[in-house]
Image (cartoon, rainbow, N blue to C red; front, side, top):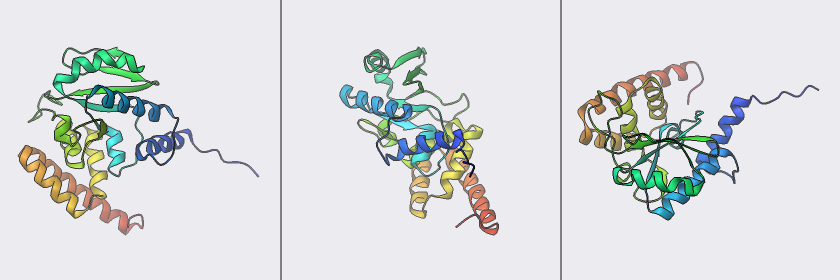
Length: 213
């Protein structure tokens, strides 16, 4: 009987999801890189809020990503860059504005600096890790805070991530998101409501086709 090999893309996705969910002891590159960041954050007293694709997985959308995005406080940017090599993290690019590019275990790490605009036309700046729910160590940004960062950068991938996460967000979760975004900027709340409509439309279509619950 012929054996059907599992596609590499699926294996890669399984590894990333397992690393985020912590379902088992992992020795994959991304799990090792996450472990290194957590050790650095704990020992150096530098809170790191994990955002981007990994946080999307954490909040319910299991999709592949090849890098780690971390929000770093503005006052910690220089020391983070200085101590990173002590933990085996390579400095690929030291950006004057704090958008540093690093690498650990071959995994790209993108620094997202507090206080900078995620894009030129963004209505607000990037919040600090504690505003994202991370006061110490390295952990995933809370749902509402993560959504704020995605609504700020607002690229095609960001919008897709938000739609998929909204599909699995509870009514209580939606209320918290609305409350948070209304305190940040009206534009973000409007964008979220528009994407929620898209999410609900897609869920309805999936139910009609037998693919939804």
